Length: 449
Picture 1 (cartoon, rainbow, N blue to C red):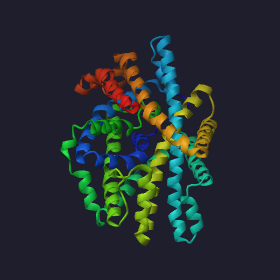
Picture 2 (cartoon, rainbow, N blue to C red):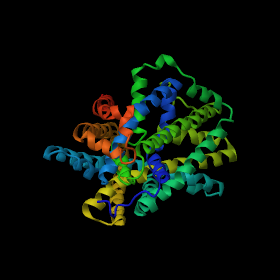
Picture 3 (cartoon, helix red, strand yellow):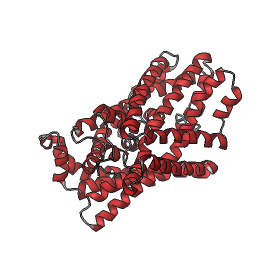
Picture 4 (tube, one colour):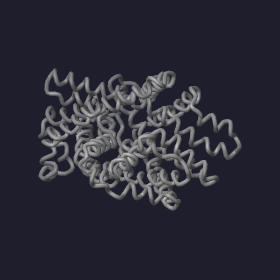
């Protein structure tokens, strides 16, 4: 099965690719405002604890299973089955993961197209092409279709290049660019009037909220979803890791980078919101909560940039470029989930599989755009609020209850014979079997009610 699958050429290449998968638009615009609305540094503390108490163990489950089977999500889950019943469940779970991943990319491609449009619009405005700039930032069906199509073609082109020449090569370019851009933007914004107010909101803890069920559940959700878990992206990436690599340290590095970028984003987003407030831009909703997500990105920040003259144009271009990179590093990992399955199951060429899978997902995106009011929110809810937690729960059940413990530990011992003697890895199989499913079930229940 491993012959023509491809493989990451280096540890750093995998880390950039996996971290890029985890670092998406939600890390940049969602996490900071959630922190600010849930006790500031109190939320950060709970999030950091839960990221390594929940997200890291589940991340390792996906990576270990992926490398052990060296196969796509369907092959991996059905391959560790113990009988016909668990084989059917494993196959169904893998197929459901492909479906949910495709749904996520269908709305993600639309939002990423908006980011791409704004990135290009500001320089065009400087050049005097105001009609083109306005078209790129206006909410119209033709604009949404074209920008989504361009972004999906970018994603497909990278996947067509393969694991090493496509995913690894571009992730190794995009991730350092993302980190440098994020640091530079945060450093500049912190010099502006009003920034320190936002920083205090972000960093000063409100410990009265630390045991709030809302804070804990929000932190649980952020910790789980920030690492792109459940839909098979990390499992598939894990299947491309060399057997010579030390999985526990690689997984820890990916988790640290992802969490670090989410926390770093707070040093940009919260200060920039309060800079906007200082300049007369409304940053609170009618209920008194901080504006977030698409309202923050497409309303608050453009209004801020408009008050800053030439500096605002440069800042806007850099910011939306940052958002486009974050979207692209995630989208390539999501598209790889169905592509890996098609290549291995039907023996198609990678180019053919990427074109077909990407084309079908883009078609779904087009349908959503044509009936945006009804479908956009529904697809997001169905895939991220319901599908992803359910898949994470099933994954933990499979790794904890179906996969034999000795086989699992043997995979870890390929590079470190003493790894099973460490405290974490002695309790990890039991932890994934009992604790993680309960926590994810709580998240899933919360999404239902």
